[in-house]
Image (tube, rainbow, N blue to C red; front, side, top):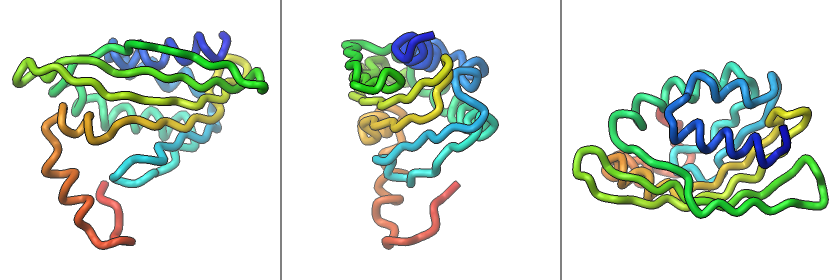
Length: 151
């Protein structure tokens, strides 16, 4: 698969709640980071770590929101393994029916059809708001710098 095809499988798989299939899109050894995550950027360096990541986060997503990727724009780079993908997750808050949008940019390196490196930049405030977690986010932001990350 091309980098663009892998990206599309990833974002549509998340939207379709196919969390069990997502780790197979990644190499056994990978480097996935969320540099703008207000809860801390915990690098995911293996397929097993990604499987755990999706397993922990899937229930939180399934219980609170439904969404789909929209406004997808994939930019090719001089490196054939690397793409920059701009998009939005657009959806509905299940508890209220309110719509939401969360813009995102993923920078992916795909080798032999598998993600070997990814930097995922997403509007975490919009996602926290949609998932009813603004209070939890505010608490995290009020912690002193250097405080241990919550699990």
